[in-house]
Image 1 (cartoon, protein in one colour):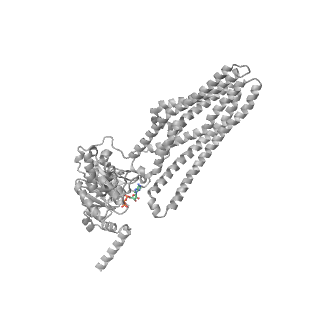
Image 2 (cartoon, rainbow, N blue to C red):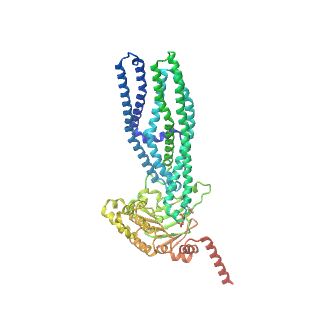
Image 3 (cartoon, rainbow, N blue to C red):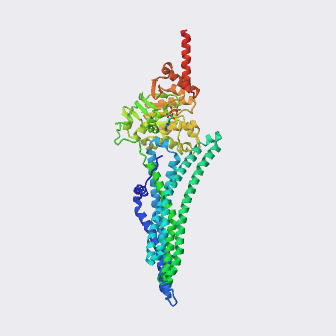
Length: 621
Ligand SMILES: Nc1ncnc2c1ncn2[C@@H]1O[C@H](COP(=O)(O)OP(=O)(O)OP(=O)(O)O)[C@@H](O)[C@H]1O
């Protein structure tokens, strides 16, 4: 995961396009907050006039009442301005938060699968939720208050100088160590804030993984170990949070203590100045009342600075994802097939090589596929077999461009996949994986997820397509679910069995009415008889669909028109099941292994070869 280091200004510049539409309201919010602070600073000035001009024996009592009313009026005005600030900024801040969240989600959808292979889901979750939530609070409160606070301090200090430069110098002297500590605090806190956000992301990933894998953890009795590892991670985060709190506490101590000390020293000096007649009592009272108003913002500056630094780190984390380039995208001018409905579905792989992105970063990358050639005729069903880890799933995912070929090309009816618009391509090619993902939605919505827009627009056609897809996938059970096809399934819904989930996922692929169907062993949880039923119905309904299916069972292989054998990154042989059985030794071993479950094929192959040699020797002898 790349870490972005930027200056605060740079981070704000990145955020600016999102802030631009709400800038007028933010500015109004800023002026409301500034107005409230100025009003607070005006109260001591009223007190000064009151004490100097009216509060003496025989002084005019009417002026006292005017001053009291003025202080009351200023108090009400301050409260009103504070409420106005909230009114101005809360709604636009939530608009920005929402906009950032939606753009992040959109970008995550566009990013290639290899990005998601590398990033923990918790990291993305914490960026989308906690970071943006914090940013909203910072925009609505922290950012404005930091500016207002700074201005209040500047105006307050200027007023203090106008009243007594000697006393003001005492306060200015106290500011020097505050600024020095603040600079160090800024540097250190930024690092710890970033660490804490990253650790929170890792912790979210750990929660997500253990929730998903709860059955495995329970079944293997690894709950305690999982808890210990989680505890260690949580403890790390706790320690970082404590470090953050300590750094903030130290800076807050300095920024609270020094103004108080300055107040003490200033009081002694002020009394001396008043006694010597260099300062009026009214000015002395007004000076300290102003100092008290200024002390508030100075004390809050630690908290506001820590908010700003955390927000900067959140902006960096947001743009780390947003700056990740979309490597698999539609071409600028997609070559639309003249009549997409009339595509024949001839799928060809030409000299295809493929290595995963992390391999390509290495000096000597390992290529999973190396110069692979394969041709599927329109409407044909081809099974793909090969030993575990030979790259069958990777090969399949190249067809809808979930991964991109490193070299060579894949074509449909002679047209390179990269020439199609991505949406168009994924309408033409439909997929179903062994490891099914269902969304927290009704059966209907899950199945019709990829259905063509014209079908979805017509209620009757959509219902017919849904019924047909469920029928082909032998998913009739869906009709008897508690709410029929409206039953919510997926993570938050009704739990389905592995075979039921697979059939819904297969129905989803069928309802998309693809020209090319790639199936990564999606029938593995089905019994052989049901698998045969599905295959037969698939052939009837998707007569013109070219199907490439990864097979892990001899029964799946037997149902295909032809079989392709993947070996050492190439297609080593193509033919019917019986042809390959008859002529290809490696194929026989792969098929044997499919029957008996996972075995060490290489050593078996070697043993078989030795056995063959021995037999041959015996015959020759
Ligand atoms: N995202 C990834 N990054 C790097 N390597 C990967 C990634 N995904 C898979 N691999 C590796 O690529 C190899 C091929 O994986 P693939 O899933 O394509 O094999 P397969 O032939 O489908 O295996 P199986 O029959 O067990 O499903 C494996 O060694 C796997 O560890």
